View 1 (spheres, one colour):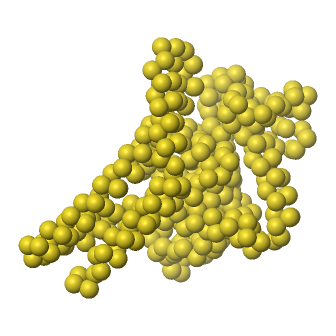
View 2 (cartoon, rainbow, N blue to C red):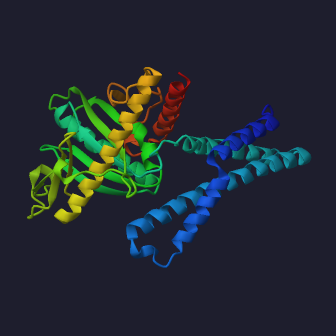
Length: 373
């Protein structure tokens, strides 16, 4: 502890904080809060519940961001005062508290720095996540269900609301596919680094000979469509099929044709919805997700053009990006960032922030490399 250079540490903290503060644009943040606060007290606000929820959610997020910045600034000042008092009074206990607070502030600044990297066109949006089982038979279907639980538990840990839009169960166990919303600001920017092919290696619980099995699942993350997005889909480009919703093993859980399968004819994109009670609700949900996927396709086409001009980048989002190994050893490793952790149980219980943070930093480095090329 005696060797800790507090002046240098505090200088580094203030430098990092100043960079974050500049990127966060505090003046713009305050203007946004003022404008949203004015909208939030409008007498007709809740005439449109969806719009009202969006306004109040954005206001809460921006107020929290400003409060977090102000508190961190104060905590850095407090550390400096604690160190001065400890030196003046030769108080090792106060100095020890200063060290603990210094480490906590470092951690908070690192988390805040991650958020400043979410500057993509749609990063502020809520997210729609789709998980599909891949190669590996029943193990892959079980893996898809494990991943769905992982992301829902992650959202629960952060206090984010979720809504399951569609689940297609496999015959023996697990899921063929599932689609759900994460209803939180910046959910898309945060979770988009999770998109790609995930691999599980374990002793299969479905193999009576106890053999090791490798299985795959694909994760897709798209930004939720908003009313002001210019994604218009002519009726002539949409094919709609209706069918009965079903539960695990094909057991009927609905006696009417309320489930909807919507196909976008030009692209072949298919969206199924069955978790709402009426066909009308499922159709509206399917259209919203279809528009969101088309929005992402448009963004990917634009990115592809930029990449073509900038040259090749050594990373492939569509390829295997993370391995979850449960046997012969226990390890979860991201193959893009090389971030790894040795507790798969905690990861599958939603403790994935380390992987997400590393992915966001990796993506920022990739974008910087493209810009510099």
